Amino acid sequence: MIRFGILGLGNIAHRFARSAQLNPNVTIEMVASSSQAKGEAFCQKYGIRHYTQDYTQLMDHPAIDAVYIAVPHGRHAVLVEKCLHRHKAVLCEKPLGLNAAEVSHLMQVAASEQVFLMEAVKGYFLPARDQLKEVLKQGAIGTPLYLEANFDSVVPYQKGKYLFEKGQGGALLDVGIYPLSFALDMFEGDPVVAQSKLVMSQGIDTYFQALLNFADGQSCLLEGSIDRARPRVALIQGTQGTLEIPYYYRCQEFTVTSKGQSQKYESSWHGDDMSGEIQEVVSCLQAGLLESRLHPLCQSLKLAQLLDDIRTKAVCFDVG
Ligand SMILES: NC(=O)c1ccc[n+]([C@@H]2O[C@H](COP(=O)([O-])OP(=O)(O)OC[C@H]3O[C@@H](n4cnc5c(N)ncnc54)[C@H](OP(=O)(O)O)[C@@H]3O)[C@@H](O)[C@H]2O)c1
Image (cartoon, rainbow, N blue to C red; front, top):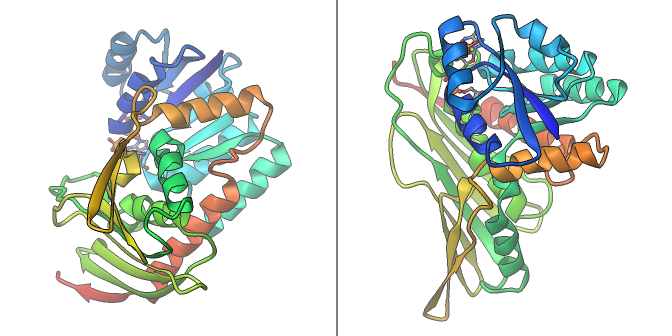
C-alpha cells in the first residue's frame, strides 16, 4: 500500500483524490491546505483521516510514503526539493519546474537523495497511447511526416489565480506540455524549435504557437491558449494516410484514414484518465525504482528545455 499526502487542495487535487480511490494499492493518509474549512471538507468528501494547515508537517509525517504536489507552478520546485530532502517520493504536477534550470536542479537533488520523483503528465500512461504507437509502427499511415496538436480554451480572468500571474502564468507553461509531450511521444529524436509565436496580454502569454523540426524531416505544429476555444485534437499525417486523435492528452480513441477508408480504434482507461499515472508511481515504488521508465526525468528536462526555447525564440505580439 502506498500512502500519499497531498499538498494544496485546488482543482487537480480533487481529481487526484477521486482517481486514487479507484486504486486498491493507494491510500491518501493526509492532506495539507492553507484553509482549514477546505481541508476538513476535502477529508470528509474522500474519507481521509488527517488534515494539516502546515505543509511542512505533512512532508515530515512518518506515515507518508509519497507526496502529490498540486500547487501552482511557481511553488513546485521549492516543495519538491523539501520533500526529496525528507526522503518522500514525489509525484509533482506539471510542469515540474518553471524552466530547465529548475528541473535540472531537482534531478540532481533526487539523484543525490536517492528518492523517486516523477512529473505528472498523464498522457504518457494511457492504454490508447500504446495502441497508437503500435499502429504507427505497423505503418498504418505509411511514414509519419507531420503532426499537429492544440490545447485551446478560454479561461476567464480570475484575480489571484496563478494562471494570470507574471512569472508563473500564461498558456505555454500551463498547457504547452500537452501537445509537446504528445509530439515527443509520437516522433523519435530531438526536435529543434524552428519558429514560435506568443500573444501577450497583461504580461502573460495567452496564446502560443511553435513549429518544431526533427532531423529526419518530420515537423510538428503545436498550439495552446487561454484566450480562444476549439476542439482539442491531434493529427498525424503520413505518406499513406492520416491519424486523428481527439483529446490526445487523455485519449480513448483515434481514427486511421488510409486509401479512402477509415478505421476507428478504441482503448478505454483502466479507471479514469489519471489512473495510469497513479499506478505508475505505485509500480515504481514497489519495484524500488527512482524514476519512471515511461516518463523519466531526462524527458521532463527535455520538455522544459523545449518550453524555454519556444519562449526564447518567440516573436511576441502584445495585445495589451
Ligand atoms: N495534470 C493535469 O491534468 C492538470 C490539470 C490542472 C492543473 N494541473 C496542475 O496542477 C497545479 C495546480 O492547478 P489547479 O488548477 O489545481 O490550481 P488551483 O485550483 O488554483 O489550486 C492550487 C492550490 O495550491 C495551493 N497553493 C499553495 N500555494 C499557493 C499560492 N501561492 N497561490 C495559490 N494557491 C496556492 C492552494 O491550496 P490550499 O489553499 O489548499 O493550500 C490552491 O488551492 C498546476 O501546476 C497545474 O499545472 C494539472
